[in-house]
Length: 92
Image (tube, rainbow, N blue to C red; front, side, top):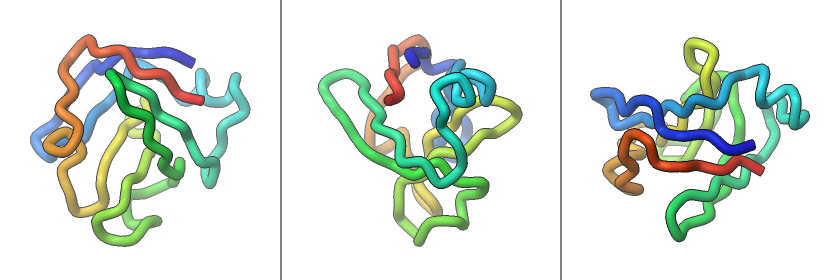
């Protein structure tokens, strides 16, 4: 599924316009490992219920307010990956 960056919050978490329904359609559930592609990068991260489901400093994807959010537990995802609103992100 392909989406775009819709918001970057004060904690540098990146929210995409990919909904939890979109994830259901590609059969991605909590505990799935997502392959996330953007710009020239490909990273893998678990889809979890909360940030705390992974160790401190680890990548994590959660559904926040119905949309997929990319984060680092006790970290700043966007400081590391420099995405901007409107950037295209692909989830596999």
